Image (cartoon, rainbow, N blue to C red):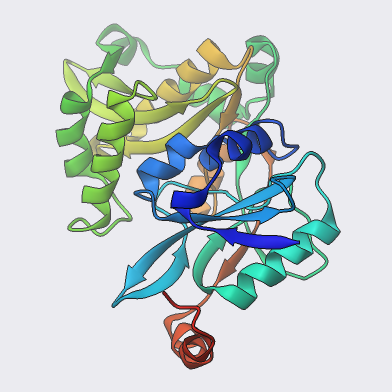
Length: 303
């Protein structure tokens, strides 16, 4: 039996235990991550007594409740002791029958009988850094061999949110600068204050040229942002920063690249030779949402 539990009624002790001990464990399903990224606008679908759970973030549009994965919250889905297609299908059916869905992303472990679209993600699993580096593509290794002039005049620094903020504002791409960029920075600021987020910067002749933002979980380092001054793109600062984080953490942490659907980004990530980990998605057009609005309204499931 699956039931919908509103945020105010969630047993977070049981929810947290289910997620942390699940076969699909993802930092993005933790209460702390969802509270920040979804602004506490999320329900949980619960199977029996928290034997399996599925967080469902949403937004309100003109008073209508619409499922939508938050910015930088890549994967959610079903969390259970063992991934079970039959149970996953029940959750999928319940979600589609009871919510208007704009965007929902499952996790890489969830399997379904129903054919769903998928997106790409890339993962490096814990290993000796020497073994990980040995697998890098020849091109990535070349990029990491800085020439003497750049090597002598560059450095890596950990910087504060305040130091990173202006650079990100000036160099963020792929987001609506008036909306998504502001939301992204607000989220970064909160995670930074919670000591979950770090900013690492590449400097050339004392000028910041690249910044990456990484989120730390007990077993995962996730790349939540990669920002570059295009004037210095050929200098490979981003590659150097990511390699530095991998070198410092890959011995006992997963490194999650958090994406790879755009051709240029996919090519860049593949240079580190990570494993491809696709995850199932549900995405509906605005036209489909409008089409489904009346049936859901008649069922009283929109608020």
